[in-house]
Length: 467
Image (cartoon, rainbow, N blue to C red; front, side):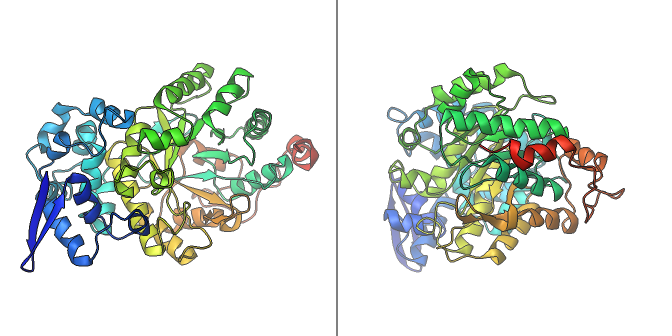
């Protein structure tokens, strides 16, 4: 179908929904790299005007990627709930934007709407929104998940403690874990990106993290972020696996590039649940996404990168997911060129994920060859807290020495909690007080209590954890 509009006495036509969506996307380097972006700001505005007048039901009538060749498209079709869609089925994309910003779009109404929406609908409406619109709507969405801690409650923001090490050295990992704990990071997960993807290394890291967690009685979950097939082998060998991690994307072809499909993810979830390691819940999957992932895998099918990102959320919501985060600036400036593009993408991703019913977090980050700096990350973190982000990721000094990119520091989590008045997950908050890391007002003490690290943990970190 051809879509058309007139702007400033000039007629613009867009050959199909895929083209219209790409042309309407706010500027980003990935779409320009793919050759699908608007050729001018005027064309972009014209596309947004045409998109605003498009009925939401058009996304049920015209596929961006045919379900016959793509299991993600088939999944999106299967997930759609006509009854949930009924309250907004007569709206255009522009009218849907206005409804989302209205008092009628309460937390309860947005929750009921989740499976009435497709990722393409959500991506489309985000393209018409300012940053404050994305924040205002996401702040009304509430997605709560549980394993050993409860993530996503109102007024709270969790943090992933990311103790990566360039050689997977156990001593270095353990000390980095403790460094994050001393600053209150770790209630979302204590998660290590391993240097290698061998089963032996995966099992060793799982045991190390579980030993640290149990010795300190921390009410959180741990994760070694190896490939899902490695996790399955580790579970077979009796490793203490809390969460199963996997990077996912918005098309079957891109996921094939990651070495996965939906059946494999279901097998992994079943295996993790069989261990029954959760205490307050059983949400055991952890997914990671990022704008540009499908394009870099040559699996985007000519669809713009932000819409492909939203389609990845259809994969995530098919599972019992404790955590999902976009690594918003990690893939590089080829896809998100500078701080401005990274900031908008982070808020888009968070908005789309929350509206689709996912426990969204964001790795507020950038690579060292991007036109971005920590001031940009300060701004994005602050905006995400206003938007009600479920969790962020923090590393020592904001510098991941293994993955070689810039993220948030543990001190940034402290800033968000003390200045922007958000609290840790309740179970973790109670633990911080119990071990003496926080005072009666819940504020982090500037000096750690002397008894926080018992003798056996000191022995572990001084040699026993070497790999």
